[in-house]
Image 1 (tube, each protein chain N blue to C red):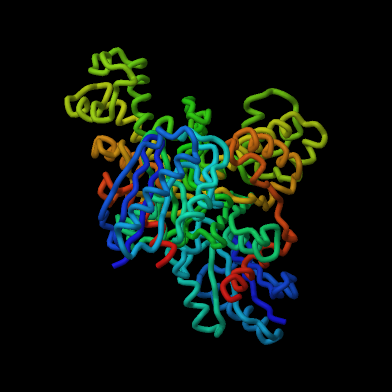
Image 2 (tube, rainbow over the protein chains, first blue to last red; image 1 turned 135 degrees about the vertical axis):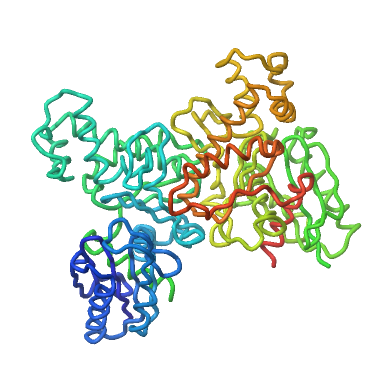
Length: 313
Length: 313
């Protein structure tokens, strides 16, 4: 049995695991990304962790790494969520020490590969994965291949600008989709709805920084007017945007994953209604909206490991 | 020397030509599409025309056909601009009579293939072609391959909906891009500008149906306020949309072609200004906006013929 190593470099935590070709996470470990002020120190820690896994496990045929702002050239470039700035030449630094095929891609691209190899995009050659976490990430597959663009910065749909909206993203994009549709976006919408309406709401006693996605779901279940409005508003923007995206690549499916989809039908239902309303006639009933087929807690590791299978098999 | 046949099925005229592998149109002919009330009669005429070319020329290795609403399955489906409705099984009907490899694709996809083989996208593996004619068509290439989507209806960016706009396209899409950015779109904008401003303009004496693209260019050259406003408005929408499209596929270039680009810098300059203004920081100076590299009068034939080279070579 062959295995691969999947590494997910997040702003807070770096997760590392060994994944079988069937998509089972056989072993996993993690450490805090944030603790390393120097990128070189971080790399030493990362290589030591890989070495340890390699000494304990057999039949490992490659390493896949998912990271924010990963380019095609093996670098991470000015990542907003990591401590280190400039062009970080991560691929070469690891290749110097680890004698295995090593692949790097954007974290949302890894999510797409994970769905393709182990999840709900098995057998599909045209699909889009949307990750709804702190921001909105996306991975696009056409003709069975990841759309990476000329440098690896394709599929940045979180920065796709919606014309009549005026919120700013972290990158200062006016009307950027992720300012509305993400775990953070819906929190901003809670504030907006409380500014618009005077209705009572549990959120009038919770600060922005103390507000969590689960709270919004629970409030919706309890009939909280502001929570219901927020889901309706978010789903409407997401559904309309997804219908627009279909004119680009006519995917067979759009797969949603990440924190915001934990709220289940509260977000899915308004999204599907807006999607179907805005879809062009010749796409009707042909594009599925699905939830991730990966186990949530391991999905980042699985996705990164999938890079190896996709490139080697 | 090997040659291929390129066929462009337009609503008004069907153009057929023999194209060398170097992209020279060696011979061409055409007939009126509109004359044929029955699709079967049209096919007989088309096959006879192909047969005649085959009897006169040697070394023809395949036939490429560009048509509106062409699917991956070799059919043309409910085309708005053709007389015949339903699913037209064009590929099989021609294959029954012509013993050569035959390829069918959407006309804008053919334009993209034409640019890739003979034009300004030579050597590029990630680019977008936008055709600005009666409507707005598009062909998207990623990883060196045409993005066709699950059925062949990808890259319908003319129907991409701009959120804060209220014009309707022929398909009744509110804010659909082609309602603004196309040879027809700018004519609609001339009307809009005359409704908005009371300034004098040559267009106050010209009816919509008598208004042609050249008139708008000439008026702009003469300083006509309405014409200048129309180019500025159209370029702003086009440039902003193109910047948005870059977040999808990070192309190396976006190539513009079709009637509207005959107005040259009048449309190009405001487009580039809006494009650069709206482009995300990490794409700046990396995406070129180019004009077609094909000779305009043969470009549809060259594009269709390019399908053959792309598939066979």
